[in-house]
Image (tube, rainbow, N blue to C red):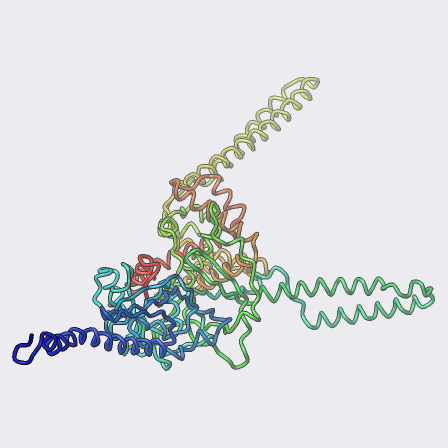
Length: 624
């Protein structure tokens, strides 16, 4: 039946269909928005050159994006110069992708899945990077650290405010490295980087951070003297004359022996090979060495390339970087590894149970550290720093070794009266005894006089021998007492010991060269030993340690002995004898320890300490 001409079917049609359409509209709206946002996300990924797997849930309006996560490291400074010194051509504009500003050596370590509704919610996964590599790379490009930011990061840690600047652009007006939100950090320190091509203020010719340039030693350190050109020409002429003479005298020899090389040719060939090896060794001895010092000690030692004519490298503090306007040393062009010889360094690597590598790394770090150095890598062990700060060498020992004059030291030895009066009294006593004995002999019968004279002469000989023994015994006792008093004398600061030791070394080298050596007054001139002299000499010692394994081992054993007696409470007689037998090695040891001690004051700078402590607390960080 129908009611007023309308059936139930009409009612369902007029009312149900619109209701059904209204129920489908939200699904259609979600589908439309999901497709639009998915298209925007794909376009963003395509412009950023990112490969990702996207899935859409049109009903729930959720877009799922699966992006790879990377661990990155800077490219090799020498082998990949183009990638290292230029910015990326296609940096990502997606939040979290600031790391794509630079070219990195990447390694995929997993995937990160995100579920978003809108395109502006997309985040690029941050990358894992070693904190020290990141800071070293930015410093190598020219970035400058912000002291306030590093102090705040060290004191507050992960509570450091977002946007706090750690590194500034070279002009100091823009932020290069800042604290980023912790959304994707998983409890790690989160950082964000910003860089412009015009900010790159350094080049491949500058000495990179964590590298130390060791100057070549002076000629007296050369193990073999290089032959002069005049001497070489004279020797070649002599060889040619000898060969011509051999050919003339040997013209009548049989044809069977003419094909054999002459004795002169063989000797000349052997001499040329020996001269070539000596020439290579001489060149290596006079070529500066550049060492890379890492957290684990020395990594690489390279002979530096020769400076080009008219070309001067940029200024840079050895082993670190300097602030604008600060004093710096001139470095050699370190442009590539193609023309650089990698030196043998196994004898100075840090190894368990052997202290040689620790001593070298500590001394090289101290050599590359100054008041302007803001970044260093190797952490000098605390026991070595404490040893360098202590006063461990008695001043009396330096007097016994001839490195100091007794007038320069506090009173430490017992003063004895002159032995001339004792010798005079003994001489008078013996003369009187002889005269009395001769007078007694004159009163004897002739047949007894000769026997008495023989007995007197024998007795006098025994007395002279006994007097000599007594004098020798007394001198020996005094020497032993003087040595004991020297061992217990006041101890001097390491720097003062190094100054006197260096003066002793300079006097010895003059004496060996046959030059006239002045007295103690000349040796005590304070202008002869300055900070520059000690540091320069220490650089020569480190250079020789790299080249000469035997010298390095002997020097490290001396350092071990020195540290041993310092830890055990004082020097013993055996230690004094060891110094006497190898005083020159002890002088080298004092220069290195003085260098380490001086570096402790340079390391007290707030910025360098804060930076080093922050890198120690966070080995790996998230960058994005």
